[in-house]
Image (cartoon, rainbow, N blue to C red; front, side, top):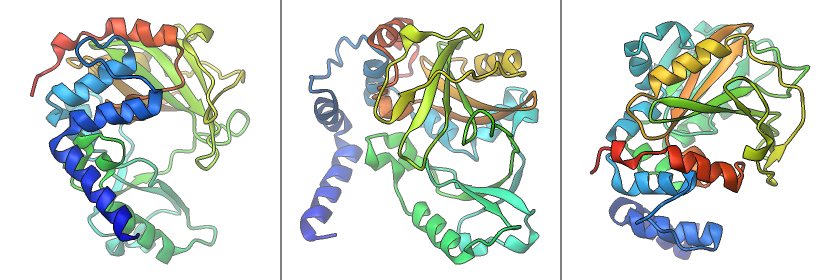
Length: 301
């Protein structure tokens, strides 16, 4: 990194810490080509930007933390849908790989994309894994796309039980069922699958009855529409109920789940989906969802 890049990075961090509204408006203009109207936000994306700027996001920090959110899930009476944790560390060098099972998942609690699946029945590079995770621990995720609530999370590493999702006949990766909720009411299930190493993933949108909602969807170079026949998850009814419980009191939140042969597992809670710049929803759905978000429910700073 040269001096110019370093200064640019420092300046951006300063803006995120002290003038996030200014930076959000600038980023929005760069992303959409339009000015962001925070006085009268209308769409899902716009209202997420408003919430970042003007609401009290302290609770977001706790619930975006993949470790601390587990206490919230338990408090909501849903402890049985938590993926078992095998260990938690503040330094990847402390991980004792020998005592962990033959297959498990390693990830950081404060970011996205640091997930590593370790299969000890096959050759794996322990030194590379340790180096990658410790590098991820140092990354302040909230600075990248102006999501300051992530910067309040104490970075840790956790190991979780590997879930055998067995989706090979449908998807090359785990199928994520992401339920968008507004004011504690689940609205739609956004399905992400066939993830290809950061190159693209396929997606579909369904209503709560599992009907495909083509008019809610938009195609995108990364988020690509697909017509695969994604079967209704066996745990759908409980999934919707869990999303309803977990989303109470929030103007907007996305709750993620996995289904393993009818067994429901919690993934995470996200308040700023795709940084509040989601290109995978149509203009029609953006406005529809925006109409359902009551900003008066937000706790103000």
